[in-house]
Length: 122
Image 1 (cartoon, one colour):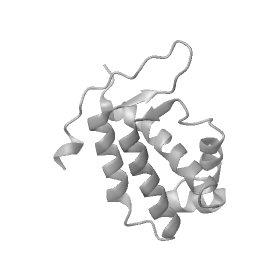
Image 2 (cartoon, rainbow, N blue to C red; image 1 turned 90 degrees about the horizontal axis):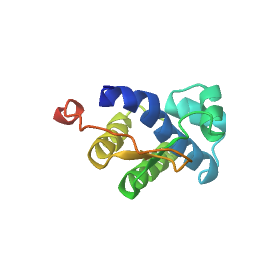
Image 3 (cartoon, rainbow, N blue to C red; image 1 turned 180 degrees about the vertical axis):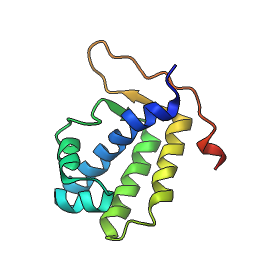
Image 4 (cartoon, rainbow, N blue to C red; image 1 turned 45 degrees about the vertical axis):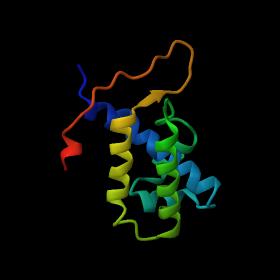
């Protein structure tokens, strides 16, 4: 069995960054280099996020999408993103309670995720 945190790191966190990167680029007009700096990742990673080479096989339910959109707006408005960690963690907590799903693809099935209470206790 894969623990939920492993799935979060490998699949879900990159998918969150995909959504944030796309929103920052499309709705806020930020360049990849600026997005990379604000998210603390490389420009190459942002390039892979926006071209669907990383994190593109996961989708979120509406409540999480709204939280991600709000987070992207906060990132767009603040060049100093060091205080946004708690907001990013809130997205993760929502996903732990609501769940996430694989993008609709031929033969795909939803992730089976057991609730992880480790992070929720923090």
